[in-house]
Structures are given as C-alpha cells and as structure tokens.
Length: 97
Image (cartoon, rainbow, N blue to C red; front, side):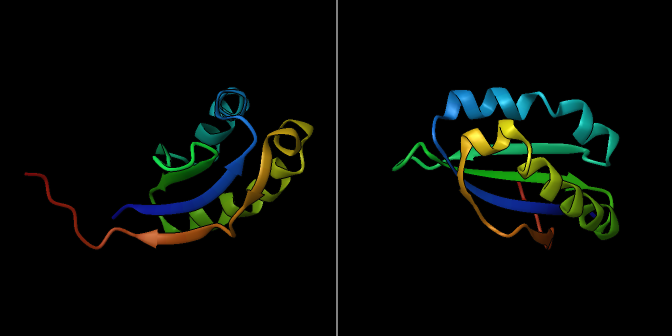
C-alpha cells in the first residue's frame, strides 16, 4: 500500500524553486521516497503541491521530520513563501480508465 506525504507550498518563482527541489533528489531517494509528483495550480503558478510516495507510514513520518531541516536550508528559505504542515495520506483506491 502506498503512503503519501502531501505538502502544499507557495513559492516565489516556480523555475527557481524547482531547481532547488531537484538538488535534493539523492536525499529523497536515500530517505525512502519511492516516487513523487509536483503539480501547480492553474490559477496561480506560485501554488505548488508535492506528493512524496513511500512504502510505509513509518518511512513517511521519518521523512517528515527530515523535511523540517530541509526547509531551514538557505535554498529553501529563498524559494518558499509558505508551506503547509505535511499530511500523511494512504491510498484508498485508484482506478484508470
């Protein structure tokens, strides 16, 4: 069962934020992230949602604590305006048509 860490961000500039986000690829992989999705609001490109997928709730909880340290880095501080408290979600159903 997939567990997702869901984060809603407001960023200053998407391209600059994405460049900083990409620098943490190895960090994410080394700390249990199996896949991720980044989406933007169609109404406001500064609103960005990040969904990080894990194998377990425990892995998502552990990463959530590490994420607090990431948000304190100068790169993150420069790009993030606000962010939501990370929420842990479990996939209840998925269907493709």
